[in-house]
Length: 430
Image 1 (tube, rainbow, N blue to C red):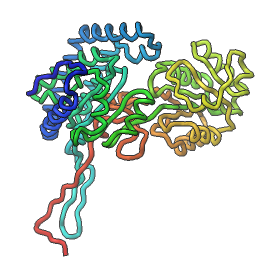
Image 2 (cartoon, rainbow, N blue to C red; image 1 turned 120 degrees about the vertical axis):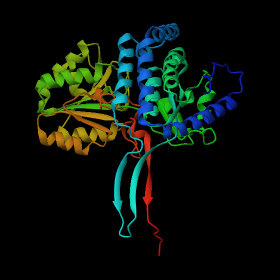
Image 3 (cartoon, rainbow, N blue to C red; image 1 turned 90 degrees about the vertical axis):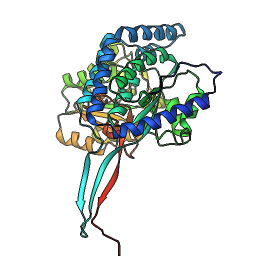
């Protein structure tokens, strides 16, 4: 096994280092593709135990990261994304345990048929190969991405943000410990051992064929750069401009609960609601309680004329507000003329990430679910369920809003491709 590389500074020969990392990951990927489900699950169990056993060490490393960014004037939303707590580490370990229990996708036959000439054809799931994950601030992504790639038979190269460098290194040590205990190559989960930003550009180049897929997890500027510069396929979403539409038929108590959770549970996650749409037919009873609830919960509301009239604390919304992912305690709100107008607004201003309707009218709900062209659409549930763990995937490597290969939460199954196995008995083509 290759020993984990130590941290380096910008004076090292970074292109050589990154090329070596990719070569080691490629070698590990070949071994993982052939590893049995039992061996991978042993590694996942050992990783879960290692995360729990090393919780204090991970928290100490994270505290240093948080102190550094706080001293640098980071926003509260950024600090929340970076911060690990005992509960969040427990959740991280629980996610590993869930990933271990889901069916191994590698080798599963999704379809099979026989041709008139007697040949049988099977479509079989196979790993993608080497996945590069570039992420910012959230150190838990190191664990989520690492274990999902392991479960799906892929090697992964992780490049965490400089702000979470210590946290990621501590988490990575637990991941490597689990691989070692199960007899799998440590290069199966590689952490780029430098804060040098040039490492990102090298990964986007594909490292000479060393990386098969790039997954960015971070702000709009990072994702935009990855989508513009990557020379390999990308699984990503640019932003989460997510909506909650409250239909006239909605139960007010349910609407209040869902809107509050969708916006304020965690404002810095990509599944947070950024726009509230309220049906004009129900505005007389629903709008004021919803707006007051948000403001009293510490959320700034920016509204159209109708929303401003019901509470003087509402700030005027600009055209830009309807297209903004705040990732903060701010929401844009407007009154719309029913479900058709809500759908039209979402089509014009949404990011095709996650959108929800609160309604008792089954026809309005089905129309919304059918016509809103987003990766995730919900009826009577919070947009904050836009998460692979909540979908039963154990974790997610990200959420994809494109329409090729994977869409929505990207879990272990979505990190596989397929090949065709054809079995004959001497057939030749006439």
